[in-house]
Amino acid sequence: MPALYRVFPYLESTPDDAPGGALYMPGRGGGRIDNPELYATLYLSDAAAGAIAEAFGRFPVWTAAMLEGSSSLPGSIRAIARYELPAGEAICDLDDARQLLKLKLRPSEVVTRDYARSRAWARRIYKQRQWSGVRWWSYYEPMWASFGLWDIRRLKLESTAVLQLEYPALIEASRTIVRPIVKTR
Image 1: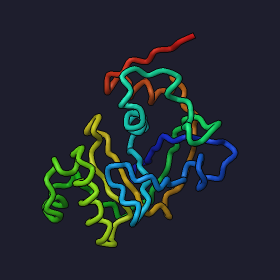
Image 2: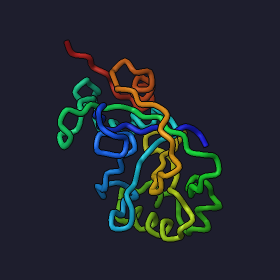
Image 3: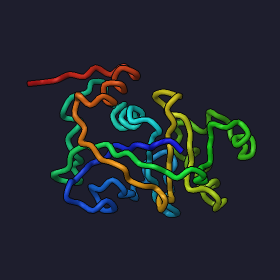
């Protein structure tokens, strides 16, 4: 399994599984495959640039202000974590045509912006009780894979780095999805 990455609001002194920690799974319910009545979801990417694009792609211009932490987590800053998921972990790969056929899913249903529909297929997959999560292609760059994990017991945190505008993967993401980086003094 490749390394996985996630951008999150970081508090250095916080335990990894608490708010501000790299393994904290917010029970928010607003994402593509969220079904908070059944599970929490940790969203990741197989590329550092992919995780950054997913976190900041909605901003037309990238500035240092976007790297500030979450308003719901005072004192936090944005960081990127790198994880390792053991080989053989049961991930439902929605970039596999055979899997889509088995699930009776069309590619357009996987990446739909209609989250009621994507949450419905995620619920069906979760209820099969054979998967730790799902993999699909990134909205921003199909060569990047997005992951939604609801079972992170075997996910190993390898490192955490505070994001800055000069971070190489941030520059790569900005170039790939065409977002200018503007540094103010």
